[in-house]
Each structure stands twice: as structure tokens, then as C-alpha cells.
Image (cartoon, rainbow, N blue to C red):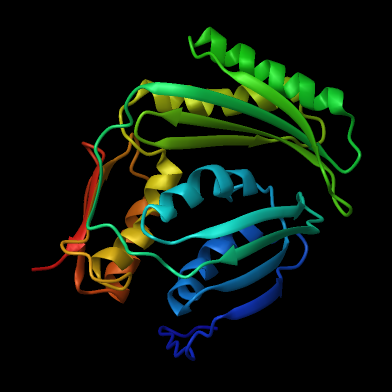
Length: 285
């Protein structure tokens, strides 16, 4: 408390099996994203993370599985994810399992200047903890109708999620484009109409479609870590190891992430053009 400096000296990371209890509704997806890279670089292993899986201000589990994981796999990093049970705010009680493989040969370049044509849109509406399935049906129907009003056609599925400690609802929309994938979610809460939950997720996709850019704002931030590791040569020999992409919104989270990464990896340069929505990550010459 009151210190102006922190010194962190971690021990070597060892491959193996790890069980971590986040406690209550702490974010298991965020913890997975933190641990994924050091454990992958160490040779892989197994993670069992217990806590919240569907939370505000955090990627939901289904975003990790459908959008984030395919993106990091493009960098030669791989894992199998599973949702053992869901955990909603405030009780949590969810569990995510991940088996991390040894990394493969990384790419030399990752170029994502445009998302391309919209190919498919999936709407999945969830209820957990014994809540009735008609709530999921109302959420999903509202999302599909809201997208249709925007000229975006989709197909939907309503599913119960296993949850023994908490209860909640969620809508997740996955949009598959010619070159990229994007994901948008919304969470239910007590007193909030189910229709609003579906419409909010649809609104996020509509906002993304209204702008230009290959990656949704969250993935544009999250992909910086594997891009930085590639540029620094930490994923293997991959000259020039450059990543370039576009996004419709450069968030403060992205620019902060870029600054922190360059402090840890001074051999890389991250250039962000907020006006054009362009980001490049490469090794300094």
C-alpha cells in the first residue's frame, strides 16, 4: 500500500496439471487467458479453473471457445476447452477445463485487413440453474427478430446449461465472415426482460456490421498477446513475424495493452492508428 514500484520475479513455469479456485464469481475466462500463454510456452498441460464463466466485463466462456481460441490457434497455439458447468454472478461456482497442447510451427505473417462477406450467424440462448427454457426461447427470438430488422438473417438454438451453484441467462451471437470470426454476448439479470437481453446482443453485432474492420473490438485487444509473442520470436523462428489487422473501434483497453506489452517486450513495436482502426505488431529493426 502506497508503494510506487512493484518488482515481480516469477519462478520458471513448469508444464503439468493445475487446479485453481477463483472464488465466488471471479472470472475463470480471464484467468484462462492469463495462464494460457506461459503454460503453452512451457510445453502444455491441463487447467481446471473454478469461478464465474458468464460475467459482465469479461469474455463469456462461449466467446473463448468460438472466437478467441480459433484466433490463437492461427499462431500455432492449441487447446481443447470444455465447460463443465456454468457460473453466473454473484455466486459463480462454474468450472472450465482446458488441455493445452505443445505449440506448433508459428506463421510468418498474420494479415487481416478486412473481414470479408458475412457467411453465417448463430444465435445461442442459454438458461442455467433451473430457470425455465421459455426464457431462453424469448431471448433467442428477440435476438433473431432484431437482427432481421437490420437485414441480418440468423438461425438460433436454445439450450440449458448445467449450473449447481448459480442461476442466470445469456445470449451469445457468433458471426462467421469470409476471413474472420466475431462474437457478441449479453447477460440476463433479475428484473430485466428476456427480450432486452436478446436485443442487446443483436445490437452489438449490428454496431460491428455498421463499421469497417476485420476483428471485433474485444478480439482486437486480445490478439495483441500472441501477436507480440510472435514478433518477439518467442513462438519460434518465424521471420518477419508480423501481424496486421483492422478493427472498427480502438478501445482504451487495446492501447493500454499495447503499452504494457512493449514494456515487457522492448524488442517489438506496436503501432495503433485509432482514426483508421489499423494495428500492426512487428519486431523493431
